[in-house]
Length: 149
Image 1 (cartoon, rainbow, N blue to C red):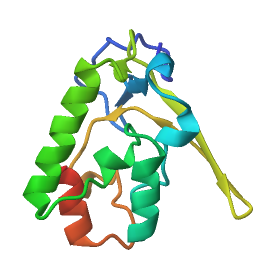
Image 2 (cartoon, one colour):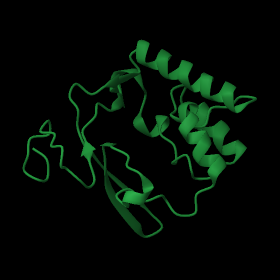
Image 3 (cartoon, rainbow, N blue to C red):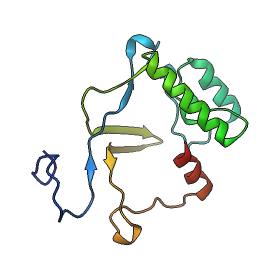
């Protein structure tokens, strides 16, 4: 059931506004990784110095930094490296999709700030509709790189 009281698969032609739907997220398989602390990293947009990147990579061969900030010579090579790594981790059972689609609640805390949110598959709309607004202070080359990755 969605927030309007309609079943999630009840698609109406006149529906307007934000459309957030469940999706099947990927999770680490606990039996395949040492600890979640060893395979996690700061968000991609946090500046990670080269020595910090090496620390994260050496923490565990399955650290997520290998997918979100893969090291390679060119952007195209980096993106291909991330795709190959993701495919390998799925094939090896390091990551697995959740059995059912879901909305995911997350919480981040640091520097006296607590942020909570929900993650789902968002239907994008035209900017002129004003339903989904662009993030402030984004750098176009970073947005392009994330979209390509």
